[in-house]
Length: 340
Ligand SMILES: Nc1ncnc2c1ncn2[C@@H]1O[C@H](COP(=O)(O)OP(=O)(O)OP(=O)(O)O)[C@@H](O)[C@H]1O
Image (tube, rainbow, N blue to C red; front, side, top):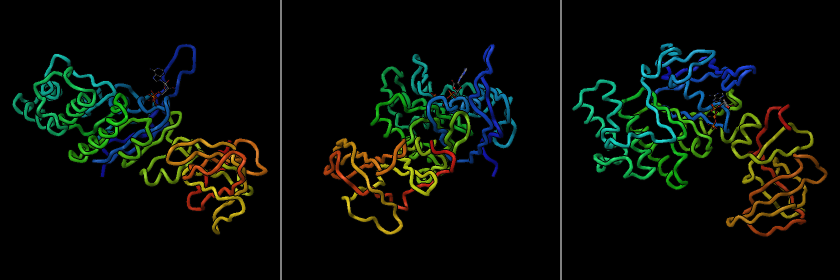
């Protein structure tokens, strides 16, 4: 099946007088299939927004090609691409009713007035705001305004929906609720969606495919269930909250999540196959449901000499001797040459 969106070695370099400029995106290959939810994920400055702007047509790649529905669209202007966009700012027209806001893109596309009203009405229904169709945006909460922006983008039946951090202006609880609603709308409409986020929880929950960028380059891509337990690089591991990079004698670089490390009383033994290290607790931070415990590994020094563990009880204090257990099934091997 032809991907809806395809990036073929796409790059963008921002020129700056007298300097080499900034390479925001380099050699990016990406294929987004119909009906899939893809997220572009990574820390600030990794090139997410630049990538999205190139797909939308607001920014032209300085290298590579963009294909939409199989056709080269690298030079196609934004208005000729059938793309819906939702931004962090809702960008609704304040003087128009919600129905008119949602219908705006349809009228701009010369959809007959009656059909535009009907489709706008259905899009508002999809986001649960039919009852407010005649209101103005100022009368709505942030979450409701974002729903209207989503309805407006969906109403044009775009071949792809681009979402640039659409939930980041909302408070934490609303953000979680809106995530679910966004996913529901995407599933109900069968839309292909590409979301930019720096929030790993958002990416894990929404993505069919998550694409992790680092310095404008693809670092890892795959389904959350494949990427999360098996980060392919130290960068991805750190980004996904793998806090521990212990240096183990005779082994290459490894990583493990704090919630997977176990601390046993000194003298107790780990199960066969697991890695056990003797150590001393250096810090304990109470976290209610448990404690974050840092323990130094005997005989080790440098950045890989301590391990952080989410310990389920509040029974350890600095100076306590422990057996640090790294269960084999949770220990992730990283490519050599990456350990810092
Ligand atoms: N108009 C511009 N002119 C020059 N450099 C730019 C411009 N826009 C972005 N950049 C640079 O390109 C790189 C990628 O920026 P981009 O906005 O795509 O990152 P991002 O991952 O979306 O970051 P954030 O999460 O902070 O929005 C950064 O180094 C940024 O400083």
